[in-house]
Image (cartoon, rainbow, N blue to C red; front, side):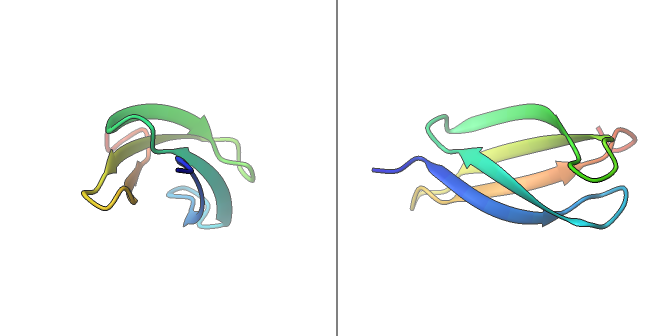
Length: 64
């Protein structure tokens, strides 16, 4: 079973589409990754659904 998913998201700062590799081997996780375009820190909150698909929330530094 592949636990890595590549997803595209819009940066909460610059709005550009970025590609992010999500590891779903952990049911709940929170981490910070810099935007590939504007280099600002994005907080990723990831939860695995019952089907094993990732549910991802992106927050900027003012929303954390």
